[in-house]
Length: 282
Image (cartoon, rainbow, N blue to C red; front, side):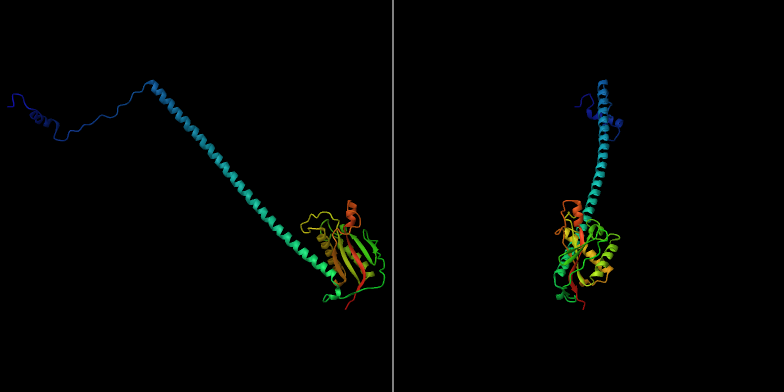
């Protein structure tokens, strides 16, 4: 049945001792190195150079961007500092404006009070002595010997004119150094001749634009200057407050034209106006 030749099964059984009893494992060999032609090697080197060049360019671009970013940050900080400084200046300006407005309101209220007090008859104000008229003519004053001071008859009053420039700086209402001594001499002559006459202290301006925020108009300036003279008058004399009053005319009553500097200088003045009325002391 089997013939003379051995079967395949018998051959396999015969080979088992030779291969061992374990599993038969197929182990493929590792990757073999690829041989490149000179042309391929040259192309690969060029590609590596190109890649390296692009990497270097990207590195330079990155450094430039970092520099620009640092400059931008510095500029932003500078702008923030400038904005902060501008805001501080605006706040300071706003504070100054508020102060100037408050001073303006106070000055206007003071002006209204002084004008109302001057216009109201003294006899109807509580605590103020009555003023009575005098029929005697006023005698000319002898104050013309004082430099710059002029005394003149004006109807039934005498006007003693003192140049404002001898008393105040331009556009200011604070007496200059030595101005109070001049006023003391004038006041002494006035009261020596007219110890009981009513005296008006009138301020006059030249109509030039006012550069000070404290005095928005020439009326405010003339009232402030006349008030400063009033306060000095009280300091250097024993005249009661009821004998004096203050008026600011602004530029409403110029002596000459304001078309020249000499004319404006003449119009800037303080006038002590001596009235025929006398103060009745009670």
